[in-house]
Length: 110
Image (cartoon, rainbow, N blue to C red; front, side, top):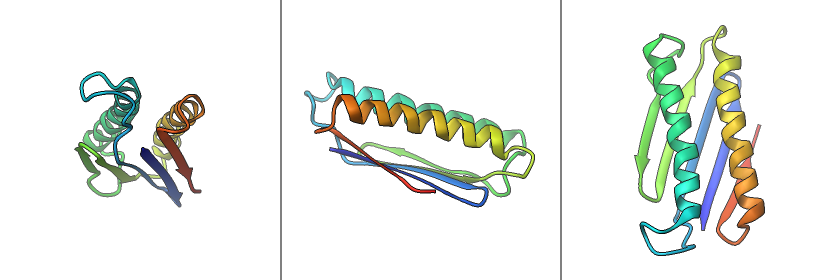
């Protein structure tokens, strides 16, 4: 099972994925692929924000099989756009969990 944890505190945002879906064999697992593309999209948006100088400190982006972490603290001006990226990904994980509840669990904290 993939456990997804999303946290927000002040202007700090974090996304963590732990585990494997186990829906199908590696390379054939559509649940894993779906979760991965959501995480990779957030990672790309956070890294782009970092390049543009929209973060208070360098972003933490670790994309490893079974253990993904994306964490950042946005500047005041950039917070709403970065927050939106996390929101859309969270919504995607929510839908994935609704459609595949035995393979994805979403824990969202604010």
